[in-house]
Length: 141
Image 1: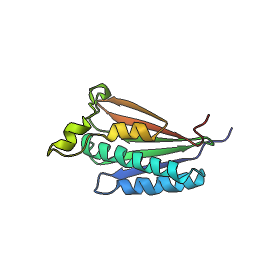
Image 2: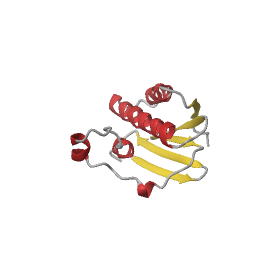
Image 3: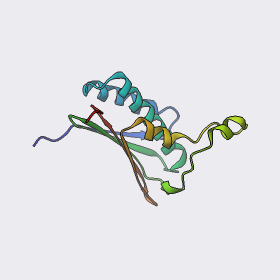
Image 4: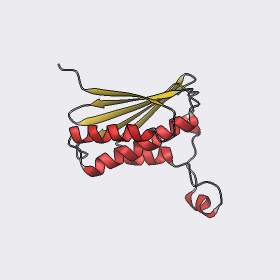
């Protein structure tokens, strides 16, 4: 049994560093021969995941991203060593209220990630959070 290819990134928490992750995702998507649509969905979900980790984790210096490449699936893990969070307490904003108010038009990151990927899972405690996102090569399975 051969080992599945894995790409691992360690990104410093710096402005626009999520773009390094999306460039890697594009290369991996091409390697897997994923459609442009799927590659775009992966990149958008990854941007949201990185920004969430950068802004909310209170991680001190970096986040880690692992791309686990399989014949039929791409699994991406975004790992921070931050404070963790309780995913059951995340509230999806009311779009009408949000658009009608002057408050920032933000807060849909997790919902967007779940819409873009085939499966999404969080493991989180006081030592950090691991977000696992999966995109299937063929969704008609």
